[in-house]
Amino acid sequence: MRTAFVLLWAEISVENWKKSFDEGLRPDRTPYGYHYLEESGFDVLYSKSVSENPISRIFRKIVSKIFRADLVHALRNIRGMAKADYIFTHTDKETFSVLLLRTAFPWLIKARTVCQIIWTPDVLKQQSKFGARILGAVLRKADLVITLSSQNQDWLNQLDSRINARSVKFGICRDSFLTEELPAIRDDSAVRVLAIGNDEHRDWNTFCAALSEVSDIRVRVLSRTFKKSVTSYPDEWEIQSANSLGEVKDAYAWADLVVVPLKSNMHASGITCVLEAAFLGVPVIAANTGGLTDYFEDGEVMYYETGSAESLGSQVRRFATDVSARRSYQRAAFERARKETLTSKNYIDQQVSLILARDAIGGT
Image 1: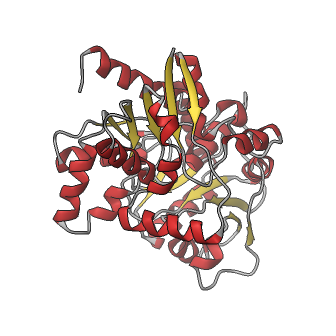
Image 2: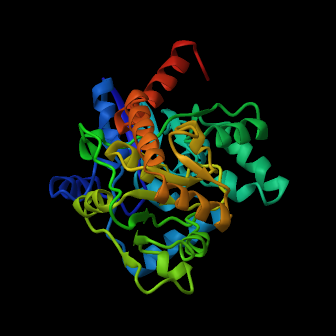
């Protein structure tokens, strides 16, 4: 049986994750569905996290910042990687760690590498050409580079044609966000607007500027970073954080529409929230950035001009007053999510298909 080693970030313990899943706190049994590798015939090993004292944690983070790679975490897991036929990484730091160690110890790490890149193109597109050339030289060593959007794939292929970059569709656990019937569209009260997200590409300032000027709406935000990002917002808004899957699903059930405010990016930021809303039948308004149109077309998700409070406010007003438009977008996104099987299982299956196809034609 083929052995796959999944290098997750240092703070993640798969055992604790599975326990949280059993308690209803996580949507999938393993991070991002990597347990589905088992259904493709792999014996799956996961990276181990360790308890760190403050000094070792600071040292690891300093090394990580210098090299843009969590080399200390990777070295702690090098024995597991040495046993593997395939290594899968989920974020950029783990990708660079594996490729650097594979270069330094080629006799030890012989596995095929399936390496995901998310944020690096957004960082390097505004920096030196020298940094970009180093990135290209490193990523050429990966057997397969996975991205979540065609924009990142195109950027990497233009950077160096020898990089084997392919975009795959991200997905969520369908069983955790399953509804057989679309919820009814409410039109007898103030429209309830939900926004969820913690990442650095959430554009909370545009969100506040746009929705503060819209009347007859109720606003709920689930975010740990919202208050750190904005200076003021209306007193009646509900600002919370979610600690369980149940709280997240309750928020979607409360909402009449979901807004995904985003800064310009290339890596499909916000796609998790868009998918969750689509599977649960809640209409979505999102910034037209990051390659979200790879997943949902206009007519399935209502897009606004990135960074424009005027554009976002206009789209919210349209949904607030046009019940038929909300119903149309709701159904279209719901059907697309199911038709395209935008699930965590399919997300893993795509990666397996690509790397096995490369092996079949003798890719090196």
